[in-house]
Image 1: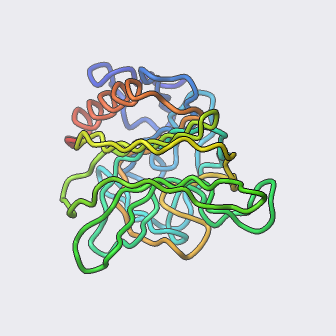
Image 2: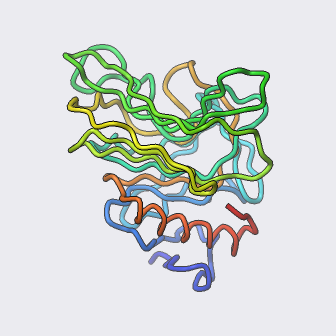
Length: 254
């Protein structure tokens, strides 16, 4: 039986490898985990009735986070890209991270089309390697006449920081609207509606894509996937819950 992680105050066994989480926003939850402490904990999936992920490669495991690098050390969730989705990542880039993936499947086989697709990707767009800035970005690839075409939005570039932040990206397939939030900074961007369906790819990964266009390393503290687009209010409620757990159990402020 799983451990119910209902609130920061109620959690008695946060580091139990068989724990299951019941966040205040639970509908559509496919994947959730808080990383760090040891590899086994970093591979678990706290979402009820969902299988664990698989840890690929040898990440750097710290007491409160893991460091992942695309195609080298990452988590294979085994979760197919949903039509609509929400990606949650508590992370921070490293000084040498260029176009570093948080959650996604860029470069994977195009489901329903030819060749590969950039699918969906929440990532740090480094831009200029020497300016110590990064741009949190969300890509959703669209199927335009059988051709996979990237539609991207990004928040304002920010300087590297020693503190992690909580990023949430959503995509609503019924409207084609994508949104990206830096919950820690209180900033957001809402993309314009699109009439095109998404060009979906293979299963989603934490900290990696399927091609060599993205690297890392990135420090990951928590990650989550929903099979629907959460509302702004739901994102705020979920952020407060995640932030409360990280502060209570890992001493991290996000």
